Length: 217
Image (cartoon, rainbow, N blue to C red; front, side, top):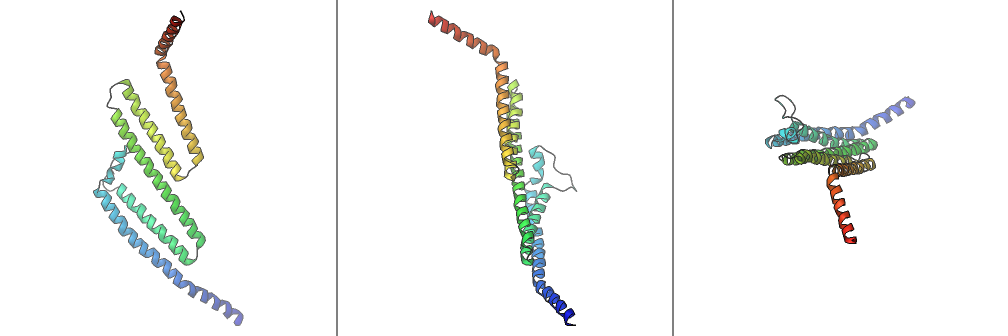
């Protein structure tokens, strides 16, 4: 009897000692869910009133969602709710003694934050690129048709490099690729300018040679 009752008593003691931690973890998650839904609802309503649902049209990557579809404001609210639940899950894991799980959740939360910040940087770059292209497109000359494309591409490449670097995705590869891209653009511009203005350059060189020969005489 003792060989059976001793393990059973020990197991019961372990379960009873774990009950407060489990109750605390469940309570933390429940309160976080209620608070997260409340905050997410406030943010969704605020962004909707500020016209955030037209962000896709402003960035030039889409149109304002139709009725019945999920809006950008609702997506932002869901992201806030997910963030609140992640922090609550970290605290619940610590309360249950799952330290390894808490560390994983902390790292995932930090990475998700970097990804969101990187996307914000790229979205801002996309907005600035479209704004610059629209401003330059008002010109009617040939250069006015080439400059918007060059400006938009340059800003997008810079924004993409900054966004990916903020995400921590292969920093050295991104730096090298960005340097190679800028170098390629510089070489292409130099070659295009040289080929397009070769007659002018030849005339200038010929004029210099005549001046040098005249000075020698």
